[in-house]
Amino acid sequence: MLNLPKGMERAHPHSPPQVGILGPLEVRSAGGAGTGAAVSGIRVRTLLAALTARLGQAMSTERILKEVWADNPPATDRKAVAVAVLRLRRVLGDNEGRWLLTRPSGYVLDIPPDHLDAVRAETLVREGRAALAAGDPRVAARHLTRALDQWRGEPYADANAISTVSQRITELENLRSEAVQAHIDARLELGHHQELVGELRSLTAANPLHEPHWLQLMLALYRSGKQAEALAAYMQLRQALAENLGIDPGRQLQELHLRILRADAGLLTGSGPAAPAEPLLVRQS
Image (cartoon, helix red, strand yellow):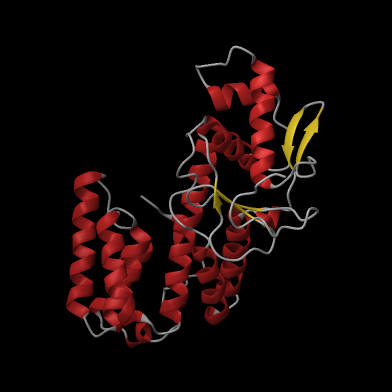
């Protein structure tokens, strides 16, 4: 009898597993709660990473060899791939090959898309942004909180950064940045400006040329009764952009700066530029 990893022993034989890639790779039984099972073995982890990056698409034996073994190919190519696939099936609780399929064109990880945490995050971010655009920040914040909760760390944290995975990592890092930004917009709309100031100071310190978070920081400061600090934040960004990129702040920031200078009372409500008609992602440095 196969000893499944902890957390998968109650899996129904016909239930597809859930896979986590937003952090160290993990596998859990469908509907399982708590911490998933870690994936042992760098070859198995890298194979799982490659298959999740191409979820539902076949990967040929040749492609797997190139991605998983890189410049150190095994002496017996096809046997090595078959052994790695067998081990991964054991991790997935898939002895019958229902979810990790063998096809003439290669191997396919064929679990439902929402059994992958990254896909759930993408869906929740999309729903959150739609709610924010529709003027419902409360629903937006709920979706975006759930989206951000999908992350347990850096994507594919314990897998080799092979070419297929590297591209996916970039996409997922951008997705998280988008989620954080939209989540802050929603919370600003809900009047949480005071509690956001510290978070936004940390974000602007970590990425001092990323204009959208500076806009959010200026607005949060102004709504917190700190007009002078909001204006000082603009000057700090302006100096950083000039010294590093030779440019001025974008139009939205310039307009917000002028409105703060004029002590525009319209900025004190939830209908300020925290959720502009054009996305804050339009101008990123």
